[in-house]
Image (cartoon, rainbow, N blue to C red; front, side, top):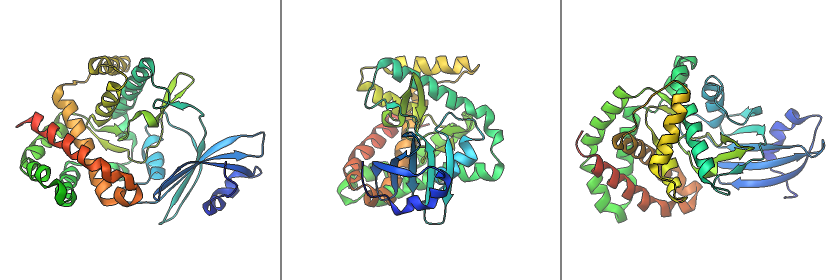
Length: 308
């Protein structure tokens, strides 16, 4: 616990009254995002304070207000907020759960797959998002093509061979995207559905850190969960089975083929790598070491997909 309080806590101090902050534990401190656990003077109650710096696209506060709340998504409750052109702050409940990275197990990963099915079912409620908001949160085919172009232009000369290989697939990627947006419904993507962002709260899986969420048809969240499941020796088929079971509980069916998962992985990797190259290299210096793996995965997936 630190003795010094961030200056920006003053911006939400009135929201805490009559309680006062008596302790601050830093949970994450990046240049574009800081997260703290606040301890209050009323019987040691704790809250989570998250500060973000807007980059491009909607902020996490806007994602909460315009997507998560209208879609009734299970996420930490936001009690108060502050926003300006240069920053935003969320004051949220502290669920005190344990993330699946700290305590992974087969049962919790299967629960996470079923939770993802619940989120995926929000496709039936997309109409609850206002049209103007939907357009702001929509990850379009055109945006993904722009992301792809950005990656090939800014990945760096040290990766020229992979970049050259990717450049030959832009037309193929475009046609695959046509099929994706024609066949699958728009729904909410968390876009960082990894174990570190999945809290086990007394047996209930709650996704946190929604800053990257977008509206899109791709299955990138399931792709990410399957990849992390490999480290726990949980088969792809097992996780897909749990996901399908969750959809069935919602009265839904969805085709999950190699192509659907490949496109989910491709869209997620391209969109994420674009953000890293534009913002992450400065905000998260270690992210430079992630670039080769992202490029390799993109090349592998797009080669495997072949011609549409």
